[in-house]
Length: 408
Image (cartoon, rainbow, N blue to C red; front, side, top):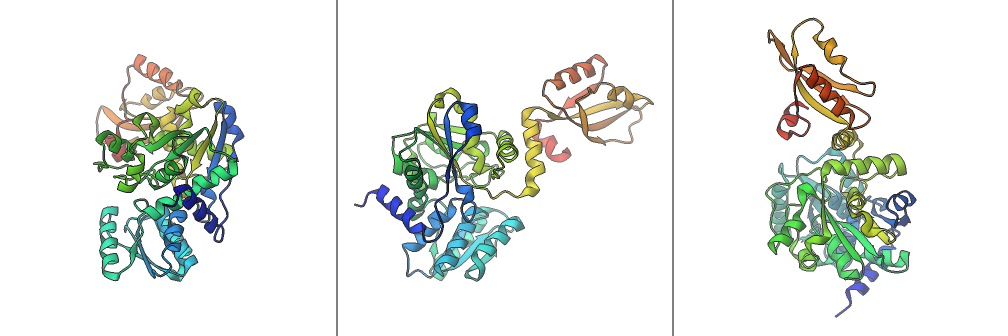
């Protein structure tokens, strides 16, 4: 039986006819912060700005006689399949939910050109997947799963082969994001127990953690799609067969709002554009702390397909997580000077970002939605203490998800 490491190396070598290896770059900023030798594997610099084209390449090169490839995806997998269909001269039909942002549809169409047909089906991915698999069976195509496929796992393992070649050895520790598990399974199969491992998931899509607790892949009841590149309801059976022994102690879940602080930091400090899933491994360094001090650590920056129309949302989430932006409902007396009284409670670093009367017909009091931005979280302790002392009635709704959905 051919050694898996040899398969991954061969796949990586074959890929050089289509695209160069992605760089493994030491990051001085992160290395100084964590007292470690931090390297970033920059999959965001691939031709489709993610690692997903690797699995598609490997599957297509191993099926030279297969004319039609079918996929279901609303993101990076669709773009990787489209890119490789054009490279190999294959026909591709890619099913995407009707709700897919136009930017992703346009990029998939751009990479695939005339080689790819895009079909928009259903409001949710499950409907899209069902339609894709039904079409594939009828048309005699090859369904290319984004992660639950041996050829895809082998192709994603080319990331590990490149890391070893570029670094000259296995790193001491590897931090890898987990979605459906194809990339992490390939990495583990390649490096084994040599390095230390940290597997990172978004809090709203921790399917590996759920599977490890259950002892088998299980479907999450609800998925937060903010980190869409890693927000998967159920880890793949084939990847989990390789990951079932990694242990819960080696997994981390990252709150989506905290992830936004890292996206902004990498953009503002390093000029690196990362999508939410692509920032997971870097954000995880905050939790690893002293355990990685003095070690050589590789973080996989898995994707940079970031829609800049989302930047205001990312900034908002980051501010709320950092505690420098809050929303509250204030009961304001309907009398002359009441607003002025409230304004005098604000400090020199406090700024009103939102002010909206919610009820304009109340005779004695009016409810006001107020958003305040400040420079440091501690300023809110002073503000709320002042409001309490002056007898204002208010409710902090920053963490109230239901109210926030309706009002913010």
